[in-house]
Image (cartoon, rainbow, N blue to C red; front, side):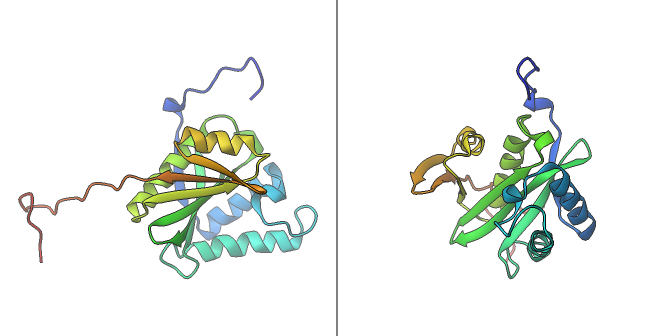
Length: 187
């Protein structure tokens, strides 16, 4: 967003997480190829969007389709706003009660409030999956990611070559089973 443009009203933004399917995967890849730097989306695997990076991208998201309880212990979603895919966010189990998140947005979707809302949604997913701690890592140079994590309430700590974030999660209330008085459950 350039100077002089109105600040978006995040209360009016429509952001949701969409499970990655084969069709969604190809739409995510199209966004990444046209609207993101490859180093923001994949590990360093050579220069530019080469065949190795594209194959890594597809394999990563396919492996994550099994979810947090699958072999990879990871789940990814497309971030959707106004019916358009804006980027991707993920969770990965890292230990008892702990998950790590990572996010990328296409350049044309940055600085509009979408990242903060997606982070809130993925934190709710993490809590629903039983996580009590949400962690993230970024680089010291990535001030936008640090600001996003701070705005979510994460505590940041600098380490050589990285910035680590840690956010405690509230567990969702236990739902009562329909038809039973409070304090009773089916056995």
